[in-house]
Image (cartoon, rainbow, N blue to C red; front, side):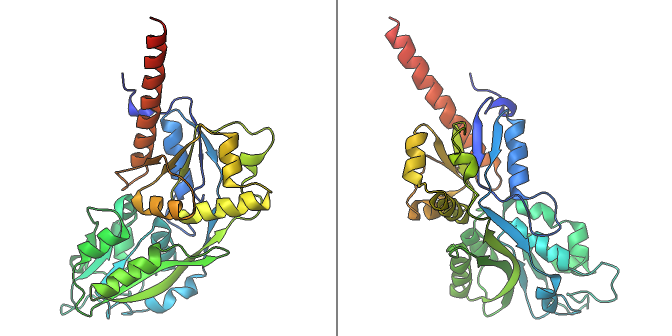
Length: 311
């Protein structure tokens, strides 16, 4: 019988490489949220962050947040929760004399777009710091929570401008997600402007220690939520004199689970075989549901073999 969601990973030891910070205001980081969900399901979380989100000084975004600075734009498109958090940190107070979007009667509608549960941060308080005229603003959350889905939801650009707060990358190769997103916007006729919101950086050579330590306990699974995390892990393993094949040989039963098909493609390009990919990826519930289903299937097979062998 299937376990209720709250116990669906009971007793499982699950490692995850998700960063623990958001790079600014905006609530709990990705890693904290994933760890909390694992605990709710009865799992034993093993955080192994391989990348970190480092906040920029708000001045990096300030040119786009001066009075009326967003008026030449039609949309603001976020591809990550960290981007929203960084943008929120730099926004002026709603009590400021002038905000980035004017509230003139002649002003055109303005779209603020985000993916999946990231849009939870686009609340009334956030929007009130963009523009006093709430009727000018529309929040867009694409049905398919991927950068490609966001471009499709925005529609044809016809030369209009869209501001994209995205990360700089330090110590890692830039994953293809953001360049592909900007290229898709360009192909759809948008004039995309890249704004430096925060930095994604490698944690450092000791990031894999919890996996390679001599007394480390075998994880039942490892969860990857971005390809940058995997590159960071591979660098950490190399710094420790290890490799991914050696880690897999140490724990051959460890399930590799990935948050969504875009991340899965990036993970495979780095030479790692993926066992589980979430088909629902608007939140981390999707990858945890898929992981729980995999463990349930494994248990049923073991029970079936045991039952067959006892007759």
